[in-house]
Image 1 (cartoon, rainbow, N blue to C red):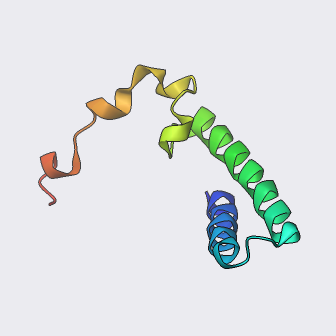
Image 2: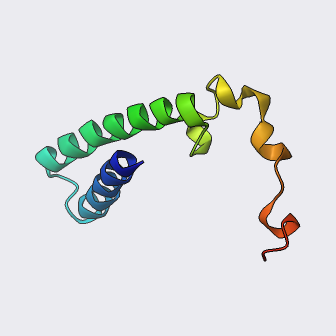
Length: 79
């Protein structure tokens, strides 16, 4: 989870930078590299524990959609 947060931060930060520096090829390459790392980490996490994002819901563990059957936060009486 920590690694996913780290590469996600790098991707988010680089997308902000690229908004103002769209011709910076080194930054674009850095961003693309970290997007691949993030995607790989998210898929590995989803395979072990279930999806963190909608992009990784096609893994084996989440095909049952059991996460939908769990109580929603407002059904637990904590909201």
